[in-house]
Image 1: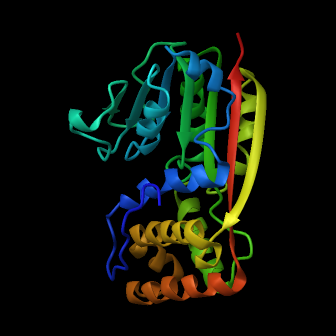
Image 2: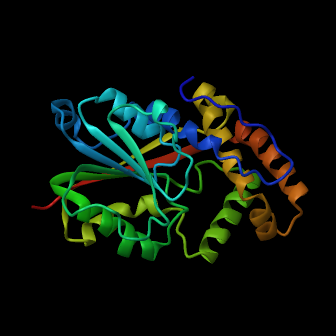
Length: 275
């Protein structure tokens, strides 16, 4: 299994973000590629500059830098969970840590051929998406270059009553922070309204969430459970239950997903910058 890591069931709030490494393998399986924007020819030609905004553990950057060794890849994030040792990097990759991704990105205008952002729906408010993140991504993209987003809905298809209570608590928690966990549904409209992009495409995929879906269904439900455990105390408070009761909800939710045959819905949106 690609990018496989062990995720244990924990009885306390987990600060373990290792589950983030699973995303690349899951999305590669769902989408059959690491990207959807038509940038293969540009990358194959060599010399292109690519940025991953909110790169997390840096798996996407590392995999892409291996696939396209003649291009330069940069990952940027406020978290320092990307590879730190230069020996772990490819010759054409590097990572930058910043105080906040809401600050102006430390790059000149029009300097990247392709700017990528994934799994950031719980990181920014709707206002921040519209007024800070997306404008900055566009600013640093070259004319005719591509921007691409990939996000997963916080609610799932065929949710059972237990999972619905958990995802409702995630929604309530996000609303308290002015965050829209379903932003993936709306990013194409937000990109269009900037007036700075053309050739806007919005693609959607459905994939199994649970062991019933085989290897990658298990991977998807492991990611969901691990993400919930990082918010254990906050979500338990939203649900007005104890953290221990929340742990039980998660375990029961995993069983329930097998019976309801729940699906994950993900989005990829890409567009080109006007000249």
